[in-house]
Length: 100
Image (cartoon, rainbow, N blue to C red; front, top):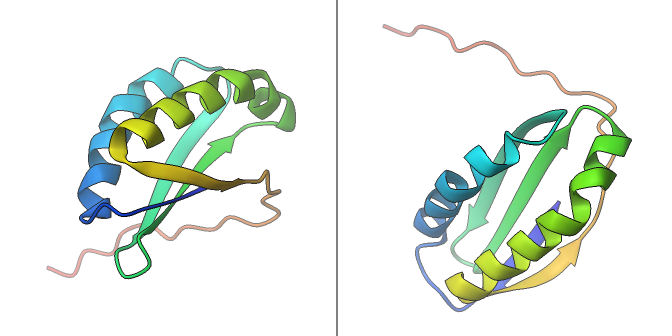
């Protein structure tokens, strides 16, 4: 997970634009599973979480992702505050419920 901070407003829009640019690129990596972006406008903080099929897959892509992360953050006026690798021992996502 990478955490970013900056002075820019509308972090959610910046995150959406960044996701469009990097999602296709990340899909080229073996064992890439997905991405979640979280934003908090009040604290001007964003977090990006990528999911990988194995620790080895994450490590193989780490150097290139760092370069991309730093470039995108710089162009968006954000600073990379922290980068940490987390284990995901449980991940349950319920299917969407049709409320129609």
